[in-house]
Structures are given as C-alpha cells and as structure tokens.
Length: 289
Ligand SMILES: NC(=O)c1ccc[n+]([C@@H]2O[C@H](COP(=O)([O-])OP(=O)(O)OC[C@H]3O[C@@H](n4cnc5c(N)ncnc54)[C@H](OP(=O)(O)O)[C@@H]3O)[C@@H](O)[C@H]2O)c1
Image (cartoon, rainbow, N blue to C red):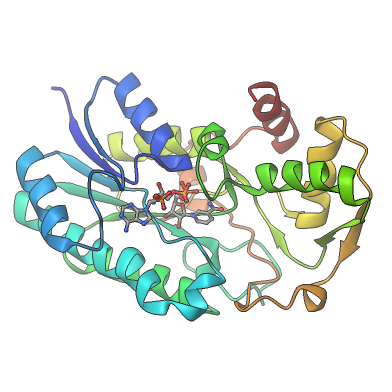
C-alpha cells in the first residue's frame, strides 16, 4: 500500500532530501516549507496534518541559529519545542507516526568519546535546551522516532539562507583572496559531519522497519572543525592560509560541546549501512556544485 507522508521543513538541507527519498520510495509526499506554513502557528500545523491524514509526519524544520538563540530563546523554543508539541498532539489525534530530528548538542561534550543513544543529556545553551525539549514533546504523546544528527551537509545547503560548514568555508576562502587575512578555525571542537542524503535514506529505512525511540544518525567520523576545513580545501584544491584557533578566540554567545561525536549504536544493531567516507562525500558535494 502507498504510504502518505507529511514533511515539514521541506526547503531545508535535510528536508529536500527527505522529499526526494520518500518520493523515490513511491510514497505520496505532502511537503511544507515556511512559505506555506509558519510552524510557530500550531493551528496551521494541526490543519495540515488533519487535511493530509498521513501515515507518517516528518519534521526537518528547526531554528538552527545557535548563537542568536541566546538573545531569542522564545523564538528557538517556539520552533524547536512548541511546534513539535503541536505536531505530536496532532499525530496522536490522527493516528500518524511521528519522526523528529534532534542534535548532538543535547550533550555537554565532557564524555570525550562517541555518544550513544543511552548517554545522559546535558544541553549547554538555549538552542540545545529547546532541541531537548522538542525530543521530550515528540515522545510525550506517542511512540515517536527521534533521530539525533550533527553538522549536516547536503546539496540543499547551497540554496538555503543558513547553508552549511562547507559553504561557509568556501565563502571565507573567497573573502581571503581579497583581505589576505589568515582564516582561523577552531581545533578544540570535534564532531561528526553528516550527509543529508545518507541520513534521509536511513530515516526511510527506520520508518520502513517501524522503529521508534531515540536513534543516533551521525557521520561517526570524528573530526575537528580545523581538520574538516583542511579536508574541504584539499578536496576543492584551494590554497588557503588556514590556521588553527581555539574557542577562547571566538567567544560566541552560546556554549558548544567540545566533543559531540555520535555513535549510531542502534542503527548498527539493525545492520543499516554506515555513512560512506567523509572525504569522498565532500568531493562528491564539490563536484555537484
Ligand atoms: N545543520 C546542522 O548542522 C544540524 C546539526 C545538528 C542537528 N541538526 C538538525 O537536523 C535537522 C535538519 O537541519 P537542516 O540542516 O536541514 O536545517 P536547515 O537547512 O536550516 O533547515 C531548517 C528549515 O526549517 C525551516 N524553518 C525554521 N523556522 C521555521 C518556521 N517558523 N516555520 C516553518 N519553517 C521553519 C527553515 O526555513 P528558513 O530557511 O526559511 O528559515 C529551513 O527550511 C534539524 O532538526 C536540525 O536541528 C542540524
């Protein structure tokens, strides 16, 4: 039987891949961007789910501006927590399954080893608290599937206002050509960049398998942001004056975990394919540009 799915956040990096993946798997896809629905309006969320009566609702939307969230915690909470509550309530009401995405930032980074799904959470700022609240709301009304991911990159990021780390680095390299100033990138933060197309495919697998609860869906390859920038410039064949920096030189409003690598223990136990090598994915991303 054809599955029908609603996808919120359909214009984001992950959202475009979810639309592509579920369409390729012959699902009937109802996708919503911010232009169609403002997720801070719970009534609009409920109406969209009621009208579509989907088998599955997927929420790839997020307020992702980690530093801005410190001045605007209500804004972050409205999208990352209260909109999720409205979705979960409507899913329960209309018997839809619910899939929500969260972040490696629910952890404080003190473990210094890859985080598994059962590790204790301890968010370090307004964005991270709002995302953890979203996880709780998603699971408060039904057995939702919550997938934590990290440092997402995908072709959609070329067109979104927020972009991704690759786009930021390419822009900075371009700027350096005019300013001549060295490009400083932190080497004391380690994460696991994640391919949006890979994550969309694994999400569809988990939905097909009827999985619920918290899953980690990260790239699993630990890399500091400095080394990630080096990898990007090497792949792009760009000669950039890149220098390692530490977090003290970038005192951002939000605290960030120093180490937030995710280990996909539950996906592994189901035998799902791990993400391909980061270097080859970055090369493919750049080729498609
Ligand atoms: N990107 C990362 O590095 C990263 C890291 C960890 C976890 N995650 C999680 O992964 C998921 C997917 O992230 P992503 O990289 O695809 O993010 P993204 O590219 O920034 O996409 C998020 C989408 O949400 C939309 N949105 C924000 N506020 C909205 C509102 N009030 N109403 C309707 N739509 C709204 C955005 O629209 P506008 O563009 O118009 O604002 C955007 O299309 C999110 O749950 C995110 O928290 C991402």
